[in-house]
Length: 185
Image (cartoon, rainbow, N blue to C red; front, side, top):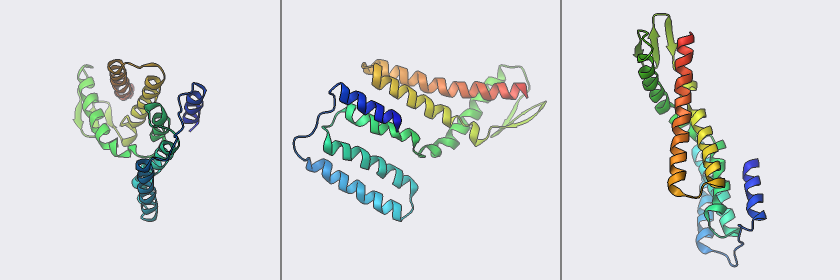
């Protein structure tokens, strides 16, 4: 939230937030739909719906006050990194980590048998648990890279390249960490 507030302060300082002259019926209708979805998901206790609709409420509220632009929308969309929406990626990332670590262990010369999510070596058995999936590494690399792109990179190709390298860097760092822990163990 502090980064979002800072970004809006910077946008206001640089005169990049343009107020609306009149009410937009499209944004108002979408805001009403998002508010309805928020109300229903809260009452139905659907946490994913709650968070998505809350983000929609924030974004659409801003779009009813300011004109649409990427600069107006990005700071509030940036809040997605603090919402607990990312847990669904854990199993996929855990499987990906097991696969990557099994390849990396092949370069060590240590006899390795992988039975997901366990890695067996002569010294013992290691579990690549949910906490080792790399989800936090991924979220941090996505957040920092998207913030850096928003602030400093304007070329789309360079932005995509930087984003890709940041994601791969975050995942590779996790895989190296897991491999090092197995080797140390």
